[in-house]
Length: 102
Image (cartoon, rainbow, N blue to C red):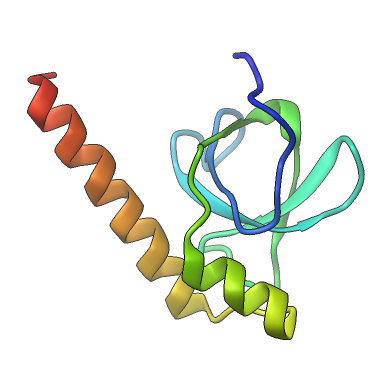
């Protein structure tokens, strides 16, 4: 899977490898040029993020404004905001695949 650009804090990713494969999450921190910390606000809370190799993630071209703003202003984001942003994103993805008839 080809990587698009570099990961950014607040960016939505799709997990390609591991137990949470095919699930969406949000990058809450960048460890180095190889690893990031991700959380989904549900199974993986903001306070206990999962360290993932960026090669095992598909970067989506979406950074929810409320998540990005919260992380920039306070360095934190609530689990509720993470869940809300991911739900809205997955609903948008679902509706776009429905429109294409897939």
